[in-house]
Length: 224
Image (cartoon, rainbow, N blue to C red):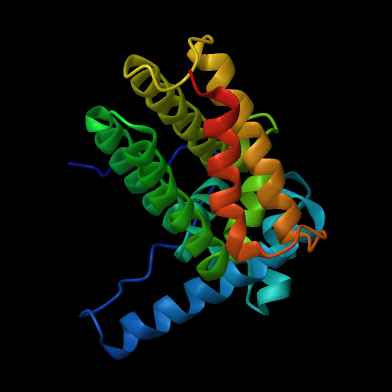
C-alpha cells in the first residue's frame, strides 16, 4: 500500500528532538536550550511587547538557528505559555486555597488571614518570577489572540476566582452587597496596577508592607 503524500505547500518543521532519559546528557542539553529561548524571548517581550517580537528576533537573541525554535516549541503561543506557566500554577493554587478558606471564614480576622496568604504568594512570585509577572501585567489587558492568548486566559481565571471569592465573603456578611463582579474586578485592577508599579520601581514605600496594607484597605473599604 502506497504511503500518503504530503500536502503541497504544507510547512515542514524539524521533528521534535527526543529528550533521552530524564537527567541524561541529551535531556539536560535540551532543557538548557529551551531555557535559553525562554530567557531571550522574555527580555524582548518586556522591551517591545509580545505582539512585536518574531521567532527570528528571539532566535537571534538566543544565538541559535531559527529552525531550532520548533524543536522546543510549536509556536510563540506555546513559548509564552511555558514562560507564564509557573505564575499560572502558583496563582491558581493560591486562589483555590483562598476560596476554600473563605467558605469557612465568618469574621474579619479569618478573612484577613485568607487574603494575606494570597498576598504572600503574589509577593513570592514577584521575587521568584519577576519577569513573567511583569509580562503578565503588561500584556493582560491586550486582545487575547496569538501569542498573548495564555496571558489573557490567566487574567480571566484570576477574575473568575476574584468574583467567586467576593461572593463567598458577601455571603458571610463581611463585605458590602455591591455586585460581586464590580467589587472584584475593581480590586483586581487596582492590585495589578500597584504590582506593576512595584515592578517599575515606582516610589511605593516598603514593598514588604504592601500585602497587609492592600488587604486592610480592601476590607475596610468594602466591609459590611
